[in-house]
Image (cartoon, rainbow, N blue to C red; front, side, top):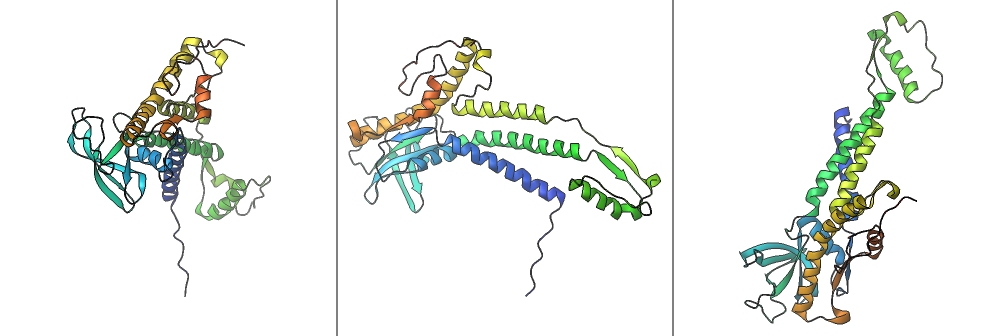
Amino acid sequence: MSRKRRKILTPFEKAEIMNEETVNDYMMRFRKIATSIFDWVNLPSSMDARYIEQCLYYTGSAALLHTEEYGFINTKAACQGDLTIYGLPSQINCYSYSFSDTRNVYNGLIEGISEDKNSEAILVMNNWYMIPTVATVQLFAQRLAEADRTCDVNIKAQKTPLIVLIDKQQELSMKNAYAQVDGNTPVIFGDNNQLDVKKIQSLNTASPYVVDKIMEYKKQIWDEFLTFIGLNNLSEKKERLIADESNSNNEVINMNLQSYLAPRKKACEQFNEKFGLTGDKAIDVKVRSDLLNIIKNEASSVVDEYGKPTEEKEVVDE
């Protein structure tokens, strides 16, 4: 049996594959960060915090519920039914792999609350508008991938800044010579009988080196992404910042962080209320301790996960 020949990709096809792989790489990096910010505390062993964050990241909502078959579980959530007086769905379809069940949403309103723990579910929102994180992450990934690929092109332009015009009979000799250049051969020998220098012309296509500027642009995009998900991103040294600038940056970061934390805490409160969990059995969600300490040490009006202001500190020159 003859082997199938591997398709030879054109330069354009190779570039398209590299473009897609670069975007996917950034998407993976961002996903790892965005889904690791919060720590779910005291979840029943039958529930999965990883899957909660994954659902919130991709769809903007999730469900916490109790079933006769599995006990406490968490699933994806699709809103349906009429809206409540607060504009929230009255029902959600709780679904996952090989599981689907339509439940009334527990919302704390006296009317419609059931004592049957298997008839209602808790709606968990990624933010108050149930917007998936991935929607914005996609934009950041595309911008960074575009910057990376621009750097690749600019760097290659530094290596081959010329277009060589030659006689067709000299093409093979020139290709062999260029192969040695591309292989970083220190000395290249040519044959006078094969290369007529009078018939060789070159066009200068050199482009200015801009990789350093693009890398600075990438840093700005990264900082914007970190602010978006509520992580500190001050790339300047503290001594270069006045206290007001540092405080203002921390307030924006904290508000973004709280936009994700507050809806999650609300879901925990409803879950505990619905199923009568108190004390050590009550579930909760917190900013991971190491991340919280970084934020606290940065100064100002940043509040902790309980809404209490941290001690205000000035940023001074050392």
